[in-house]
Image 1: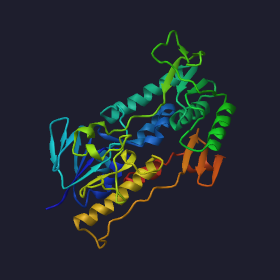
Image 2: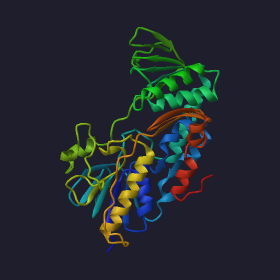
Image 3: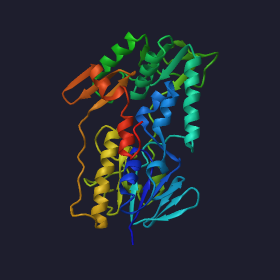
Image 4: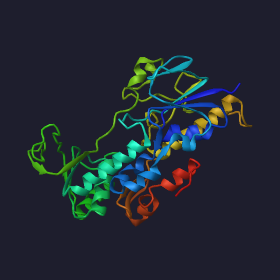
Length: 352
């Protein structure tokens, strides 16, 4: 009898694991949407909708052999997963990969329609407000500033510096680059989006910003709230992350793993790291299932803080452990293709 592996979540970690394991176990992937999306490339699709065709991939295009349940998991018992559509899915091994919570449409067509609509919003606006100065806000400002240099772009961030998840030197370089592209940056202020009148936005600093359209680029909630009513309720830390051991198993559980952004691994929450989690757990599941020569479980060590923020199509900002670089070199690494060809190839798809 093939062992039953259930994966909850079809983001980077869940998709890579499902693809890797589908020929080695009876795999079920549970995800509320019918597709996988390359998340770090999504902003490019807002300025170039055709790019969305490459980054939004139906699960069935890479996960051909296993079972696909298009629904949300709502509970976990010692032996099965219960979903919102009433399914009860038994497991021998369970992997939680629910990442961050985000209200996404169910179908690929709807998601591509969303990108076309966002593109029209940008194209038809003469002034644009971006709320949030983390990687999403900075990258969106860069995409718009490069593709639509005639637009008036204002970025408002409540923090004392941009990109607070990396070092202050990188923040300064990002601020200088945005200002050079005529993006107006307002720090230590927030925007009340509930009291917008005639395209006038009020900031906490008493300023008024005129903008035809706004984009909210603040952090997303972890996708773990539902676990508080399950057998894993005591395995969450104070931030809602799942506590895992060196093998990426949930602490104290022999047959339940967690991968991706939802884990308490002390590292930057990035797609590349999530993919590495998936590879380690794929190996460990094969060991536990009894496949292959290796009998020892693999261990995962937190990755050093390496971050690349794309700034338009040709430039980028990279933070490595010992240096920070702005310009064409980081742009060559990430900004042109945004790792889309590599990610598609890793999923067994044409890079196109």
